[in-house]
Length: 163
Image 1 (spheres, one colour):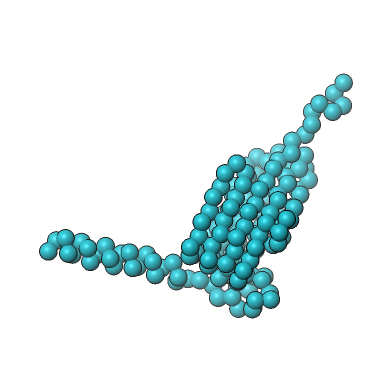
Image 2 (cartoon, one colour):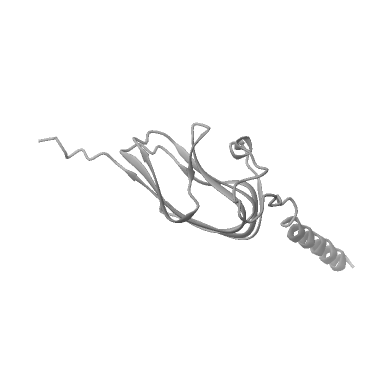
């Protein structure tokens, strides 16, 4: 009897977890042609504690490279913190494919959105004279996407002009 009750409770928990993945998605209200965010605002993106819901998602971060894909994503998440990026420039190379929904990827510095990372293949964003901590955030509304973002901090060449 105790095993049966435990099994029932476990089943209820698993069903609750699986069904919660589909709750809370933000509907794509502006249609397929317009991929800009319709409901999420800059304030939502900059929230101290962002929140999101996703289905069938996989994210990998390794050596300044982020790979992320989801069948359905709504809300805001931090993709990467780039601490103390002091150098001649910060180079961000991106490949972002959006199949459905709305999506925005932004670069934040000191609590301010300073750049949108463009959606599309083989994109490059350059921040000259990088001096601070940066944060990459993703915001989506029922978005189905695949992205790959790689960043590099180019340091000053101290060997030039030193002779």
